[in-house]
Image 1 (cartoon, rainbow, N blue to C red):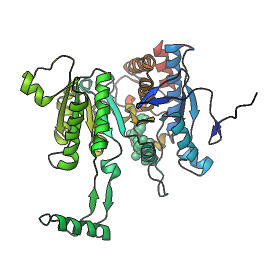
Image 2 (cartoon, rainbow, N blue to C red):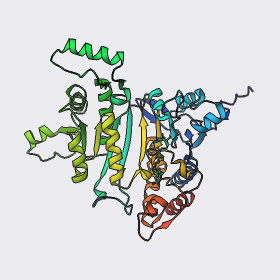
Image 3 (cartoon, rainbow, N blue to C red):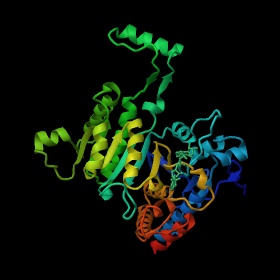
Image 4 (cartoon, rainbow, N blue to C red):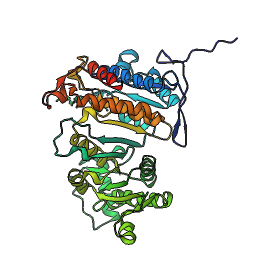
Length: 420
Ligand code: NAP
């Protein structure tokens, strides 16, 4: 019998298990999927250890021996650089391409070198066009607002265009001058001061519609009441305004039986929602920030352009108690990477004190993405119970009265106990 050659990436052996395949942008999950993980730099090490324990315990509790994750470490960031002299080795890219679904802790942005943010690089290499950030409140978490429990949104932020594909030229550069001259020759009535820096933000129909399509599909799958298109189209008509128009177009063309637009709701139904329909509405960005604070319960799924989504997701995370428990996912048609939304918090590295909630909840998103909802629910409930018991890491403890400060590893242990 011929011996099957062991497969290795970065010198690390691939464990036994199966590949998660993608069909029409959705995963087909085997019972023992191989899931690459990047533990992350700085506090990533503590966070990953704790998160893996929690995810494995939930899968075991939910499915016994029937399902299991075959974790496979892939290298990126400082660990990769130390071992391979490359911040994002080719092998890591190949492994992520092969296995499709991965989870990562925070990575340091290398300063000075040729590489820009590793997170941005991963999003671009795999065309992870959807940045998904669910934001909901866990009872007991200290929050700066009066009724944080009213906020429960999922933000779909476009991840490849707008300022992420932005082109900039400094004031006084030959490129800026050429563009200013070209604009003056095309539109003589427009004036641009010669000492202006120039920035271009491209937003396409393709990029906008694939993002809004995902947002509406999410609302349908999870029976959510509305999808709001957030934009600044009153000022930037052909980028932000077009995003809104293309969003409505995809909603009306592809999801007509599922949706109703706000305009039709008032024109045909006197503002009364027909049963089973999803409301498609739009809000100008500045108004959205007010609304999410003042009337958060009127919003559910929010689809938006890159820069708006960046601002809104951090503002919403703050509203429910901060980045320590804010998860995220970057999703494309053939790959999905789940990740912490905060950075490496290097001053707490290896001290076993940091809040692992963000990666644990990213794990919940990953389990849901794989269709392992029972395990996801176990973690969600146990995490909520642990916070209610006021057994929390330093960041929450310092803002709560009567709380017990626990280490990262202890927090994970309490979550696992609470699954019982
Ligand atoms: P940061 O690592 O997010 O940390 C800033 C502060 O946020 C920390 O000092 C801490 O505040 C709080 N914090 C962050 N994570 C926390 C957690 N899990 N639990 C509790 N509190 C938490 O931001 P940074 O210091 O600006 O960035 C450090 C490095 O991370 C940089 O290299 C940056 O480029 C990188 N980064 C990576 C990602 C990513 O991988 N997705 C995202 C952002 C930044 P207190 O000191 O008040 O406790």
